[in-house]
Image 1 (cartoon, helix red, strand yellow):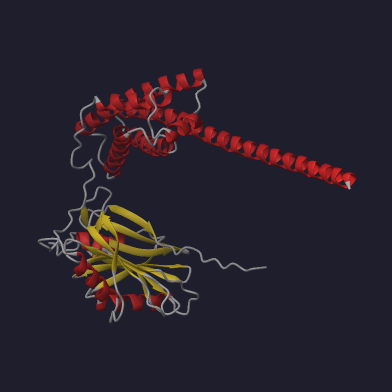
Image 2: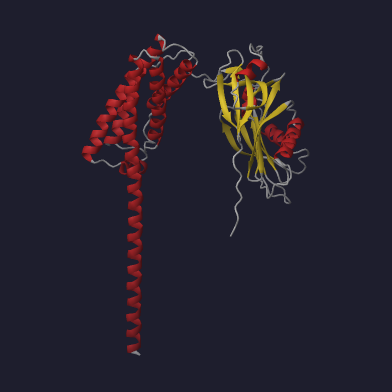
Length: 456
């Protein structure tokens, strides 16, 4: 009996030893995996930082070059380079673990530089001779800020390399301390960089260089509606007959339009919940969604559009034109814009999602419509449809020409002629300024490819 227990004891010790070996090996593997992930993150952070420094140096150089050249062609090349480098620098800055460092001034400098470069490129593309003195003044102010940032980043780069500082250690320590790091070379460097930019006065951009926000319409309500009223609005808006459905507040929207987020739970025989955002200012329904699935596509995109048009009319949204349709899984997603006379009002668009299985409306996005829709004093176009047709590239197979109001890059509403056409399988909308004939925008509207996956 004693021998039996000794054998069992030995077996238990053996199993325990094997288990400990397994745990140790698993721990080693986990540790090695964490180290590999940390090394990858460190490499990416180092790459983003050094590229940020490199891009900012090029921005500084190209801004200086734009100031010393008197050639329109060279101005175009340098400003195009500035615009590309700004975009890359913004991406690099966003990739760094600096969530706890306030960098609003630095980010605004990059945004302003990109916007100014793009605006000046547009001016030069429209045939203006070189840069005006006012534009050069703005570029020179941007240059001085860029030079300051460039110098500070180069100093920080030298410290990081000399001291072999780790970005991942900064990230881990910063998160653990809630952003409270008393003495950290990397974070201190970016805080100093932000302070140096704060020393400069605000740049006053002229109207043709600064983007502007479209003027939102004034909401009708003199005072906010109450929650109970919003709940009833949501029920009546989504259901022809709400019946036994009830509504409750799910969240509070605090965006451009303050809203009540209303949730309508399903009845016992139903599965899907409905969510509706109701404006607190005037009771308008801004957004709505039903959490449903669509198992198959029994309807075509065209038939889905007809369902969407019918639904808009039921909700007293008359005279809308479908301008874009896209199939996503078994849903049709449609963009509709209202018309004023014959002019399409693109800023006032709505989006509707239709289940192509049975034509049920499952989603509505109406924020732009409720923010901007109003009757406008539209000018008469100086150029006729025939004149616009004569400007179109002979390679574009024309399908339609129609007047349209759009918002340009700088947030300004402009009257255009929208030309739709195709080049082989590619489809485009090109918007020509109705006064000057310049191309304001070109949009590729080629439908995305549809994929079918087969299970082997």
